[in-house]
Length: 244
Image 1 (tube, rainbow, N blue to C red):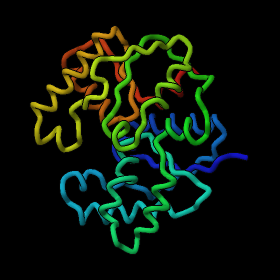
Image 2: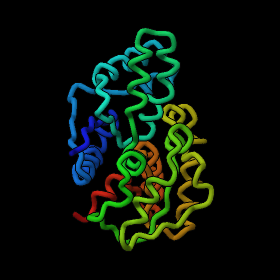
Image 3: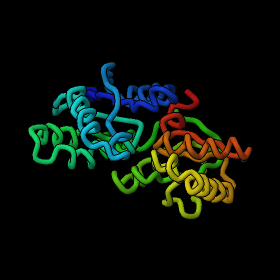
């Protein structure tokens, strides 16, 4: 019997990295999931929330709950730990004491980032078809690590790929400097943090920086391209869907 999954595609993935979303679907279907997509979905509300617009973010969050009505036997899976962390944690403040609090708690229990869903929910520890040759280093995004407790699941899936070697970088749990509006408000600090992260990655001899969050990867890739550094960024969904 297949596992029913509603996918949540964050706004920036939809607009800038649609192939990552398609690759997530490819992987989910390969492990036997029945994938559903509600085309009315938009944003989880995180940009407004992080900028301090609580009322506006709550309106967006209410729409999110409407877009993913409570169906206990269906999971919500996203290729973004950042958005999953927003729904799991920040919605608690937005809906505290409100009529939507019950709906929020039901949604909170059903939403997962892709790699934690594969490993922790389905018990899938490898995608046998995946192929990528080379050396990689893994970036623990702040949202994945600190908000969702994700650390081993993506590494386990990536390490199962033949001929792909992991090389841990120094300070791999340190922020890359993106932080949404942080990168806009504190540009110099943000760029310096990206530089530090990329230099740590390069010091390992890795060819790829892989992570669960396209927002981090987008930030790092901008620095890499500007400085013409010899390393690439890849989302874990794109890696798991590669070679087949």
